[in-house]
Image 1 (cartoon, one colour):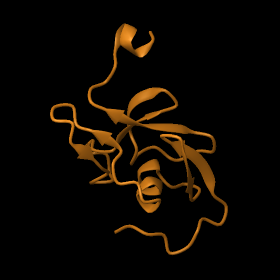
Image 2 (cartoon, one colour):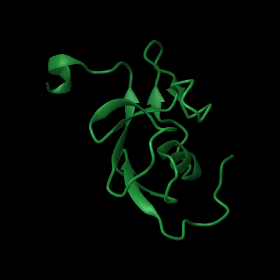
Image 3 (tube, one colour):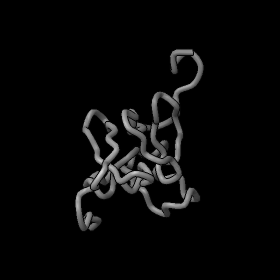
Image 4 (spheres, one colour):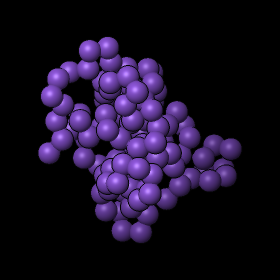
Length: 101
């Protein structure tokens, strides 16, 4: 459904679940993921259903990802940076001792 018309001329690269993703400078994580063919960025807390970026403006929270170890980051509001480590979220957020605190 989403496709780039051209490859980024001067891309920034980050990883998503270990896969290298190229993004245009200034592009958000969610847009870069969609343009790279990623369709699921997290699973829902209640039923475990796959979720993907939907509104792309920070309202629906379907694009929540973990960025450089920080959970519950809106992929649609996070600008992609070189070397960023982005991970999908599975179920509920980890807190306290579970998160390594």
